[in-house]
Length: 201
Ligand SMILES: O=C(O)CCC(=O)C(=O)O
Ligand SMILES: [Fe+2]
Image (cartoon, rainbow, N blue to C red; front, side):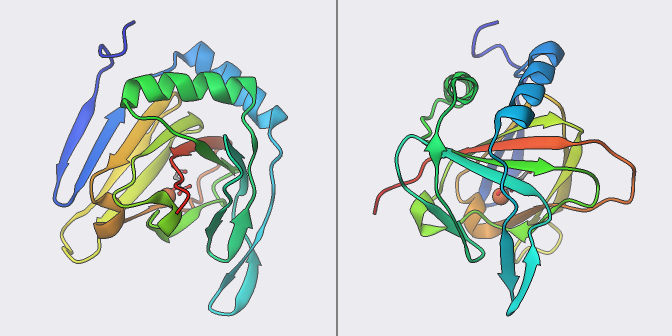
């Protein structure tokens, strides 16, 4: 399959560009990557401080990068490890599809429905103005919720399936928030890889 034959869904949103591409990896490839990444990643379980209270983050995370740039958010500073062979192969594929080069990947492991990622925007200064973020989903499908900061009718959700890629770009991180909500359903594990470009400012 060539790079441009994927079935792309482009959402027409105010102040954002959002593209969803199912099956950038076949079921078999996605299963293989899920198992390898789950086993070979140095998952960390950080504390976060919100309004002066400290909690365990409701998911496991890891950071891999091509440089030594650290990534800080919600009072956490993560230091990258060098890309593994698998992560590099995935990066090359995703760079081809998104026509953009990335130097960092932040991984999230949602162990079950109680793991989540609260409303936020990826608007840290180190990501630069209008970042392109390419987010690969492996494992259990979870809904991605997104809402405009001021246009209250702009609230949507999109199911992120096994082997799919979501690309966020344009002014999305300025004007929209996104989350992966908790669910009471009994569900399996999900791994998310968000490819980013960190700038040395
Ligand atoms: O798990 C996801 O799909 C979203 C992850 C996310 O928003 C983030 O890591 O910033
Ligand atoms: Fe995010």
